[in-house]
Length: 259
Image (cartoon, rainbow, N blue to C red):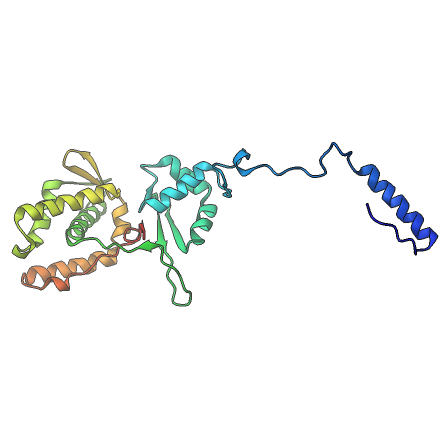
């Protein structure tokens, strides 16, 4: 209770007494707590775990984690996650931007991926590591992109390849210094397996793959032309040193892993 100022005029003291009475009347009795005790975080029904300070629903958080985990999120193979991504795109973008990561959503192709923000004006800590494709993976990508472009230009709904035809073409760009024929074949098969995991191709039956539209994002037309020029030069001069081989740093694929 507020102390009264005994030195104040009588009118002022009377007003203070009335105010004190009003406060006392509005104060709960001793058995009623003056304040509501805060609910422990672990007992909060909105919290997902002890100490949870997040504000996103569990399903939206899972989509955010998938974006961070994977190189790509595909509408075709993950329709439920894709739907949630579009519904909460602004919030997910905000969370990624807090980490200096940019979300790219290609609605036409049904593909979403992340990119590391880089700036000359801003000190940006790098979260995503670069991981260029190997030589065998690059050669396989060039062949797949060429087939996809040829088939789609001809009006074919989708492009497909057999593992044998991929090997037959790609192996022509290997030299004796690249190891035995068996090791070269293993390198090609390993490259195909990685691209299958990333969703760039999809095995429909044993040894037969469908090339997805993701190939256009991984290898843009400009990069494809550069690599085709490099292959032509390599064919003309089979003795060209390996140091002249370009590294493919493709959109959405080389920054898909956390460093």
